[in-house]
Length: 258
Image 1 (cartoon, rainbow, N blue to C red):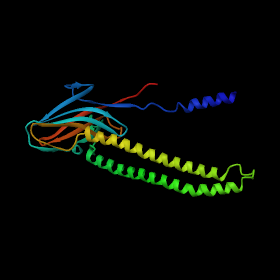
Image 2 (image 1 turned 120 degrees about the vertical axis):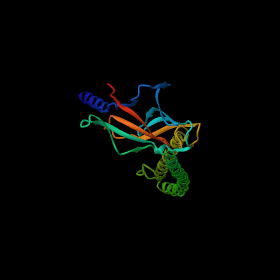
Image 3 (image 1 turned 45 degrees about the vertical axis):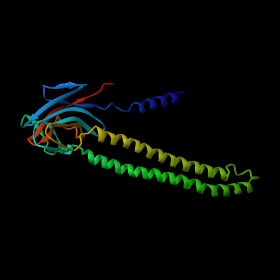
């Protein structure tokens, strides 16, 4: 009985070894903002161009901003999300101000991500087809093995030492081979489904490369790799023909309680 209590105590310890991860947000420095469906937007004007942006959210790898660029009446220019830059900043005691890192973090290029997805999907489709061919090969190879095993079992049918027949061994081996092959096929199908979802997000929701004429605007999500956590602020530099629009955010960390 004591051993049972000890086992339960050890199990309880093992099931409680994970701590909740902190949650982070980005909040604009500006006080003049507008809200829409829970998102706080800030707007900047640079000559004939306007930039509206809001922190959208994050996943395990990236942080995302909802950015709209408006060409009111300026020159036609190319909006390329990968030209938008993020800098991290931290408090500098020497200058008593925020010092921004000089190493830029460029936004992710959606066109490159779509290319990567198509290449990976091509590999997954080939692996799935190879798994189908392997299934046929396994079935074809199993037939002569089953015949040989059946003949061998017939010769030894009076023997009591053979508790597991050769036919049973062949069947077990075939079942294992089919099972492994089916798992591989399922893995590839799940990969392709996940890639299709990711492709849709990059195609539809992201800010795509666009030549922006006067009187037009473009809007979408811009993603950045999550930087190291040793910073207090970030600055987004959005290029326009009249210069960069600088957008500053405070980096906030929230720690969940047990």
